[in-house]
Amino acid sequence: MSSSMSVFQKRIAALLQGDQVIWLVLGLLGIISILTVYSSAEVLANRNGVGTESFLVKHIMLLIASVVVMYIAHLIHYKRYARWSTIMLVLSVLMLLFTMFFGTELNGASRWIKIPFVGITFQTSDFAKISLILYVARTISLLQEKKGSLLELVLPVLLVCVLIAPSDLSSALVLFFTCILLMFIGRVEIRSLISLVMLGVGLFAMLVILSDFVDWIRVDTWVSRLRSFMDGSGSGDVFQVEQAKMAIARGGFFGVGPGNGVQAHFLPHSYSDYIYCIIIEEYGIIGGIFVVALYLALLYRTIRMVHRSPKTFGAMLAFGLCASMVIQAFAHMAVNVNLMPVTGLTLPFVSMGGTSLMFTGLSFGVMLSVSRNIEKNQPKKEAKEEAA
Image (cartoon, rainbow, N blue to C red; front, side, top):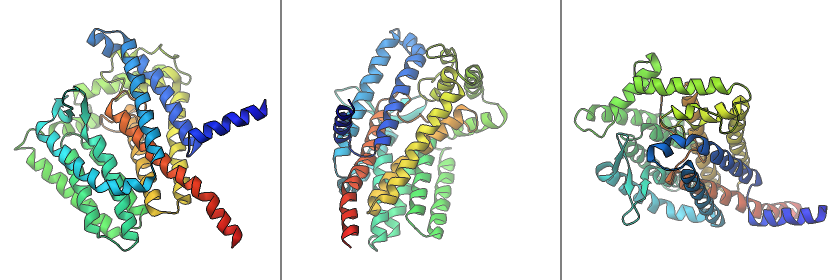
């Protein structure tokens, strides 16, 4: 029995190459996602006059598609992403510009473009995030080899973040601080980082000034959400916050059980922006801590990967993609427990979504590609050390 089990484990390891803990985290997040989306999508189903099962089936299909994307991405050597990073960055800038002026508007923000003949909406900022992290990781590795210039690193970061900020400030901030963190770890001079932060603040101030002349910069929304958080003066956001608090209070320590939550009927975006408080309502504080532990395990395994990576690009790439996901996850959780103003950030690989799931799957795939190639090179490194 034990021998057959070991054969099965070897086959699984051969199929799912890379860090096995990351694969496990991915699988557990997927299971949590299916269970919670099924519980919280009933309101959305009633609004559209269809059964909840239709949204569940659609969500499962999107999860499967994202896993396929991830599996393909993890088979590609991570060094190839360095070659594609500049092209991807240029494409992302062009798509962000197109979205800004011709994108599909939803909830007062123009973040999507519609793919012709297919009818699928595509959130361009998701593609821009991965493209910029790939480019920053590559440029940092070149700088450490005394190639390239700091300007090649700073200008794309500012450009992409400024293009995302008018319609999605929270995503722009997550991306900006992820890049700052990458540059800090990549040993970029502190004074250069301070200069970048000051330039970012200056460009943000320019956006605020420009909001008096253009409608698509959502300064009114930013101010309203900040006021709601500070003094409870915004009725829409206050309603969401109160319902989220009630969900957490009902959950208690052990939760009310899968499918027994009621606050999903009152929270407008319980399947996406407020899915974490639905997890706590149904699975209690224990369930909430378990989700936190999964993201911390992902971060720990990625840091471990960074220490083992023989190449700067692989280390920066894996950490940048992981940091982006973990920062977004903790920002989402902080909003759900009222530690931050409402942001609209989803919980990576848990919240219901389309392109966000695909690009999260792609991020996981690239991280696993780094891990897979580290594991392949590890025996060679050990053999050299023994020979020496």
